[in-house]
Image (cartoon, rainbow, N blue to C red; front, side):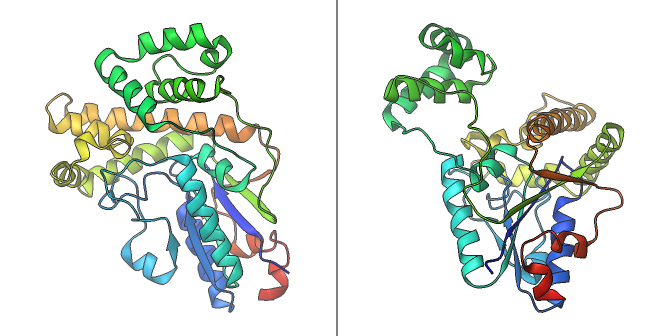
Length: 311
């Protein structure tokens, strides 16, 4: 029987990465090879280690990790490219008899990997012109144009989300319309089992605050300072990462240390709430308590055919 695909998801600081490692170790100890496929959009960037809570070199040596440290800071990333790379990694694992464990905190990226999810065509010249306009004028005039061209598309996008506004205008220019809502959830991959780690809001917020404090203590400002020399400030995707943008502002003197840490925690909480809102609408996810974390054996038992392989 073909190995299934275990997807571990949940809010920031819920323990997804640690659980993925424990499951992989449990399987490997029983003779079943396993690998982790990253679904976090920022772990692909080399050098962004502390602020992304990237798995350590020792952890990556112990358990194979895909889509970690695969891009330079200055390279733009897209969901479509991530989809292709992640699906290729999953296919390689299954072909070789390796259990893939997909881990990530981005609902969009996870949906793109597991579901029927097609991306509209792009036009680099149109995109470049719109991005220049966004940089010069801000999102307001572009959003007004989107409202005039496609009110339904504009209604599904926040007026301050310049990146999505640009993408919508680009797609309208190429195809004539833009769909701002996601397709109905239907798996493209077979054997997918999604497990979500549930935390009440107070515990989630406390763990996020503790995580930000630990990142700062572990040297996040120093990491960002070194990455600025490698082009982080003008990086098209990496510079927008939560934690890095705020630390740049701290280093520039725009925020105090306390303000930077509080803003990182706030942005992380807001991101986690948005992700949870997406996931709560997906009935295919099995939710388990994050505290205490689920047993590796219990997760393995959910996967088709796997429990018989490791008994």
